[in-house]
Image 1 (tube, rainbow, N blue to C red):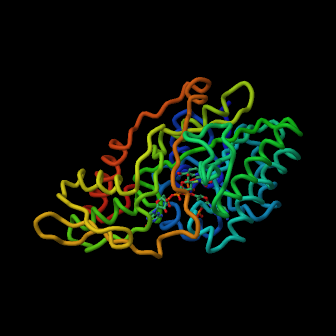
Image 2: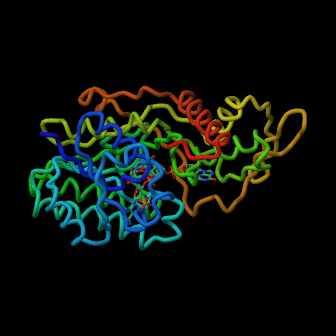
Length: 346
Ligand code: NAP
Ligand code: G4F
């Protein structure tokens, strides 16, 4: 009998990598999608294009308990990967209430539906290093206190604790992944790594003149989504549920990430100026290719994130295969391929 997995957020970056991973492991994969995704297939389902005929998609909404119950009752999944969320931190300041509604209630609804209708399903919650926010220690591990700095981070803290609450109160096999930033060639274009790669590749090809960014000094621990979905699966294969930090243990500034992409594109550059006047120029032509736009600064910033994933390395026998240079190399090469073929890679 094939194992049955249900993925919320299947149309997103992690959902698409996890789908491919589980299909290789011979799972029967079901995904929860918003009706708009089915109506606007070309735009919303592009990441799933190569596997669309191998999976089953169910229209539902994280805001509707009834729609979640219907699917869970019908397919009785062995494993539920709850990845669906409003995942853009900056946007959570602009639309707090809907972010809180989707990210808090959506998680609570799924747990409640599992408790009532499929209590033997194993549950994975997509927690985030954003919960550490204004960090209380460096590096951060599973015991580091949370100090969220955005409505998104606050919602993830609630969902983290309600997951533990269901595990302890109702014996649900529920795990929290506390995942640090992970990226890929199919990362959404608003997130800083993909935004940098897309813009600099376009600049290299003469299709764009300039890239505008916010805080260049923020430090992140960036891994590859492909490595991180494997950790999600490993958590649900344990004998008993547990919570894990997943990270590379290396951190870099946004500015360093820009430099890596410029190096990969063989663009010779130099930086000049301070604070809002910082800018990056092409050596020789002196063309200004990166400037600061204060609109990309957030009301509150998470200045530094660095994970300690030794618990996952020991118990899950997990470690990342990609380092940041390999990540950049893959993102740049896929982006150039897409540009030259005028299409999305999948
Ligand atoms: P993503 O690419 O933005 O994907 C988010 C997914 O959630 C999409 O499938 C989206 O569907 C779905 N979604 C959003 N709002 C929804 C709603 N109201 N109802 C139903 N579905 C909804 O995010 P990701 O990078 O794959 O991240 C996956 C999960 O991991 C998220 O929960 C995120 O918060 C968390 N996380 C991510 C990272 C990271 O660095 N990537 C790190 C830590 C935690 P549509 O296609 O219809 O918009
Ligand atoms: O790429 P970002 O938008 O990712 P952020 O805020 O760290 O959130 C991502 O990682 C979390 C895990 O820690 C996830 F939970 C969350 O769902 C998401 O996947 O921004 C990274 C950093 C920030 O400090 C931001 O201020 O880059 C800085 N930044 C500077 N200029 C920018 C820009 N971010 C964006 N998106 N756009 C800019 O122009």
